[in-house]
Length: 96
Image (cartoon, rainbow, N blue to C red; front, side):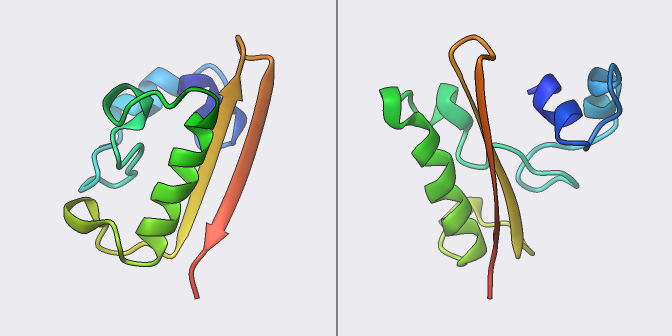
């Protein structure tokens, strides 16, 4: 998570931990992450793991996330890492 925040430009390189301490990453916070719990809480679905993040992103931007729904969500950033940091992908979705 720290490397992703830094590599995506949300946190300065080498400052990921400090940045996380300064932000509320809960679904009610100022920088919500893993609103469905991530793969540790949502469940590891094997090779389909990354798709769970895309589905959650769609639920958020379409207002269908139920009790996890963010107050305002029109743009989401989804990222995934495969292997041991050997493969990475990112997706940005925007609502209408």
